[in-house]
Image 1: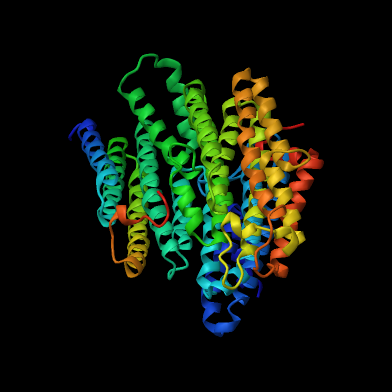
Image 2 (image 1 turned 90 degrees about the horizontal axis):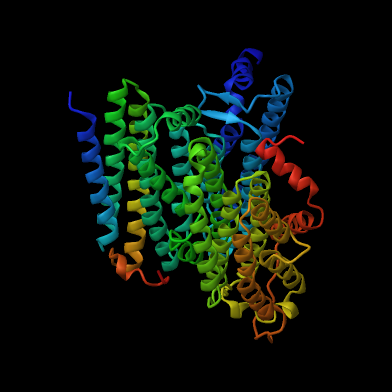
Length: 507
Length: 100
């Protein structure tokens, strides 16, 4: 027994700890694919249970990681992170924090999916396996410190999402969403890869620490714009374009509304929350780790993209009649706010970004969860008119919807308000008052279209449609999303501490 | 040995052909091929730089990208077949159920 366990324990004690949560998820994802064969057609929902076991096991591995990092950190306080596998992955507060967010999102999406897939008659094991595989990719995006690992993490996530978006293969909308996501997503990762290859060519290394160091030293003695600087600009532009695409910032946002509308609703929630958060994790690490020295150069670009996202996202959301499309445009505008935190680039700005990502994640999953609840036998439930009279039909869902809408609009005392507050504060601290005023003005159209949703749910007369019923799993997911949305709004202190932990800011 | 600039121009040309292909072609299979072209431009860059620096990491990266391109082609063609089953077309401008 001991001789069999010993090599495994040794591995975990060494480099293995850095990929422990990912390994556990992989094991369970492959387990689900086998377990699936043992189940009868009407027992397939047990796969979801196994997927949740995987998420818990991975969370346990993540706690072990965090403990190990804390121990090492106490021994050597200056240590930025605990590297593994020849500096290709790292454990630091950043990776632990983001992995925790991905696991939470994965757990919530699994809870939301069970009944939805029963209604669609597509309850299969692959679905849950793919969700776990996507989570593995996202974790590598947050913990990778090597261009190869980052690229493969991104592609693991993206390929899983292409399949998941087209998972309802008999639905024409789902097919079309998957195809559009595949073509535009593949295009953007290819462009990102081109940027990575140029970065490798400029520095001769794939480790972002080394690349950052070499580029820092270069900018000290190279003043003029030579061939290499031109290549550096090209590599930055291609990498930025690829990543802005992944977070759906204007002008690379066209895929988002179509994919959210066509994909199964729980997957739309997963794409909008987890994939976006993972891409932000990768973007921040790359921008500060690699292009940190050229910050004045990219600040203007990021500010421009943020302004465009805020404007277009908010304006296009005004006329939407489909809830999922409306949420897509609203998420584009939220990306604008998050990018503004990056423009400020000071401590408050980054804290605001991380805080906003927590708030955005939970309130958005909550809203999508309501749309999932509206999906009943024979009712698609993703049009605004399907919300009519929700207050009479299912008061609990109507109240939850109201709270999530208030949070998305940024009304206190909700998480959405605190996130925006930190971003505005950072903009003023870093002397961008015009941007702060503009961002605050952009909340006005937001109030209009979020309250349009509320009006449909609370004031319109219900038609003769049956009341939507919530399953227990959906109720748990909604409860968790509600808890974080309110807690982060009413009592922000633990969440700011979490954000500081993620960014390695000591207080 | 050829100077590194030649490889860079070759890869840049492939990259641009790929980008133009993605933007202008209607047939989604050709769009998928154009994406593969961009990935090949990446590979040429990586291998050329790897040789230039005498560092093997670039070639490893290129191998991973080849595997990744294969996976993407497999997933992509699967999705295109599912789409074709329901709609009997592979033209991008006929994908109009969801507004672009």
